[in-house]
Length: 222
Image (cartoon, rainbow, N blue to C red; front, side):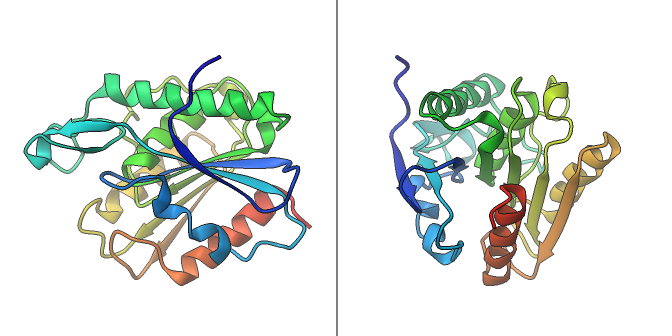
């Protein structure tokens, strides 16, 4: 059996029928988004398993080689980010292990959402859009499509609901990169929505309310 990355796991009710695998940003860990589960105020009968993996610790070139939780190394500061593709794909495979584990626990693949913030979002894009089984949705927060020029899109997820959220004043990942992801996926016929918020590289209250509604709609929660 494949050993999963260390992770945080929360269930909104026993016997969940859906899962959300949520990836944190550079230098954070799985606890970063753990509080959002309570803040979502999901319907009382919603039974969702939230999984927040911890990224492995890696030396990060743009941070002077400092070792920190990272899904992949960022080699250059230029805005579209020269990244370590091999490490990113390794992280994608780690997320796929979580997907397969959820399926083995009785969650249908089309009841699994992949979510990611910043660097975690880049991994989420690659994971969800290339995955060969139908998924429930993709939530991309304050992020960029790092593998847009190399990804092998899988037609099974051509109709994947995608939500892209971005802060208008983001100094880390400029909003134009989120807009570019939206434009690219729209041009390819994906059902993608883009929402902008008056914030920097973070999450805000209105956005949490919007995520709540998106989850309810995407997972068809009554």
